[in-house]
Image (cartoon, rainbow, N blue to C red; front, side):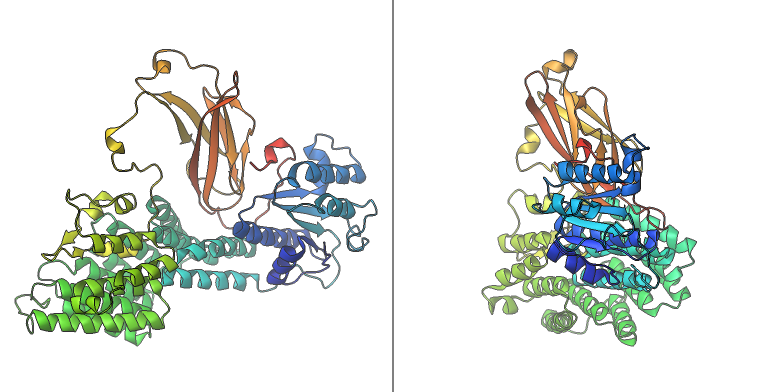
Length: 593
């Protein structure tokens, strides 16, 4: 255990907490200190996958129903709650409101009967992290850096870079911290950008509904603060989301481009111009050659290597798939198949070099794959071409990209059905646009490279469609309140639904019980078992993002677990404003499953 008096730097506090598992923060006004403790707790908890529990010493008597307790009795209640509830399972515990002097009076690791000493003793053998906030506000001390808002912008920049690289896994924790930082700072513009990037990350991960909701929220917040460039970017991302269904909307990209140009955002206008061109590139008679050249010039003007790389990629892809027209209505191409192939090869090579310079493995993997498919000579020079491309996709956790490489190696299936690894990730409408050349090379839909979708939960494996079970009983979980937000309870209903062939379909349900458990940073009330017939729970999340809940249905007469299901609930960031966390009541309901 270690003692830290006055923390000014979030990164130093995080390091101290991870090293010693105890952090004591004093010398700051209540609001700043609480916000600082909360930021540290969430950062560590998000990366370690642990729940966060919060206490205020002043509230201990009130929560227990004995508001007349003395400070010493309240302190004892906090220590006992920590000792009995949180020490057993690893977690992050924030105890704020420790009386002035109680922290500074305790030498490191000693026990003298004070609250801090009691907490140190309670956590001495645990794997949990403990953060303590002292109310001793001394002159000149500060718990939050004066440029806390700038930290939020730095987090957004790092998250955007990860998304640009095609590695959205690392963006999630950064964006959660950025939302918190901007909320604490009261920066509505910064929070709007954080919500936008969160929606963009969800689009990359293939979470269409969550992405759509967040991008709509971001667009409205941009409008509310007069952030026209942000509104344009949100419109563009919503248009890209629509392409996932296999039906691109060029008009939406054109509108985004007009908004960018009105705001004087040349880089944003170049990106909107690119996606508008890509959306129309396969239309007969569309002058794609001229448009790709214009887009490339726009990106050169703003020195955007990544935009130039994607322009070359799609230009080469269009050229490799063309039947000889050069993209200008009524004009023949400048040469035969061999010349077009050589030109496409040069464009692919240029794109590949730029993706490597920009450190974008996502674009590099897709360019390597398309280059290999369109240039047999290039592929045969490297017998390990598929393994090399698969390795790049694997490096950023893109299992969908690996599945496309598998398809390219295997060729079309005899029954014409897409492989399971693609069918469980992409909409049917998009996979219906998959084509094949005479040489059995796949013509992969352009929109496939816009996302890295995860498998859909419960998607039937091959053969399962013909074995629907109507003799079983199933658990139906329904969210009764729309758009859950952090720290606001939402109602969840659970219902046992017997199939037509199940005995319960014609008889009353037996007296079953249901129990809910949160697997993340949220509370479920009640946490004990309740009658399954009409069960209702209150779900209170403590951060935005995706939350997992586990529901267990049991037969209390025999103690048998009949069914256990998990559900994911998406939580959107709350309205901007300083975050004021409230502590859950200590007790069995706060236990981590």
